[in-house]
Image 1 (cartoon, rainbow, N blue to C red):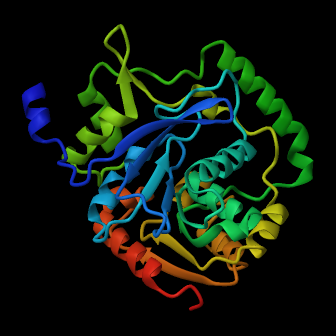
Image 2: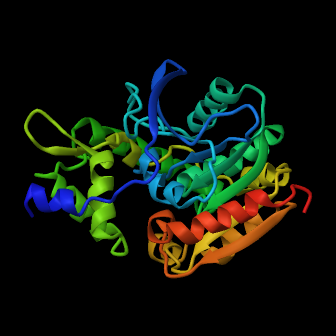
Length: 314
């Protein structure tokens, strides 16, 4: 496809974001903001998922009817946020980054917190750690991970050490793409529901050209290294039980978990876990997959605004 045709099929954004870099834990954190910041508004903080970027929320922000003050960071090692000199990433770092990001933008004021996928899991954990900081919580397919047993620890540590060696040999590097069009087609391959115009727009935020003219995904290869620590469902449940914010749990009509986990973790198990939240509302978005904020941004935006407009004690 020629560059002229590609430009013609680029998604036309309705609400341009403001891009900034802020110091968070010795990193230069890239943050997008939409809407009008105001001390009279409760900010809507949006945190993205694994191998994604803050710009991924553009489509749903465009579909919001009201002038929400939206704050969306690129997590460490993703997008334009600094990639730390590390060879693995830890969930506690995302929690601490989010904590200090809120300090920077709103001080002690509560926020509405929305997270997708990995970001949804982090957001839900955070809401149990700092319940006083969350006015309302929105979990978009933030499933967490399959349950584990202590007996799995020896093999997990061995796998982690082996994958670190593989990373340092360069065998986990993310492959480059020859053009921006190739990046767009890669996004469509992962999510066939993604329209061509949105794929072209998103590709320029999901990847960057290097000096050799190759397009590199804006994600650190170390994110592919398995977590050395087992996922502990009892700890997760303890966090869930401390959440005080009204919570909206949104899933797509297409069940991605069956494909990912091959029976080791499923949607009913997640629903059983999240039932521990004392004030939860469930919603399903039809004709959508895991990237529901790309597939049905208008339907999701309506759910978000309806939920945020409800009194917090209902």
